[in-house]
Length: 203
Image (cartoon, rainbow, N blue to C red; front, side, top):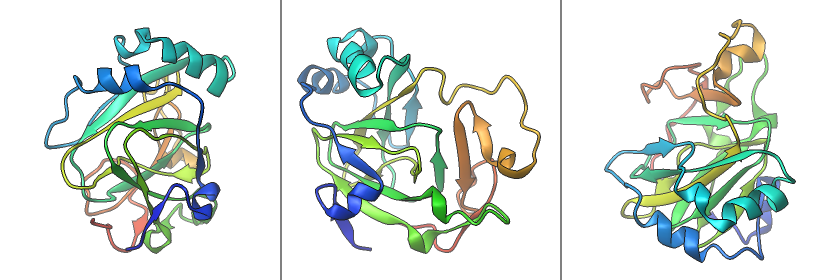
């Protein structure tokens, strides 16, 4: 699979690089977060949210919306699933990592399936701050060698448990958490709609 650069024109379909914010303190703080042999996701880390960049992200990048700052760390080599939100997600790559991403517009709405042959891979170098657009399908980063660390910034409440059970009609079948619609690969053993068709991409 061709691994592209976030500097390539092709990435503009999925997101953009954010310039002008000093992420050095956040990168340093992330060195103390756990990075196990499997993927761990923490939606909101109170210590990280005390850093000055948290307010800068909230006021500037998210236009004053309430946000949360957490992380997705560990080791991963498979696609396994794709998810999307109703808004952009901001990622800070604290190590080199690869994103496997696609377009929400390519979901087959007849059965809410998605062909994994449409997925593209992009290398995100350590220190890169990127916006991943709301219409971009994504999931846990893929390791480039060792274990990765990645900050994840989203509107407050995203990925929390649902207070109201989805009705199971249409797109509702993809809704697994607050502001999280997910399509899983049958081989991954992930609970939810098993709609990814094709190879469970491995890098």
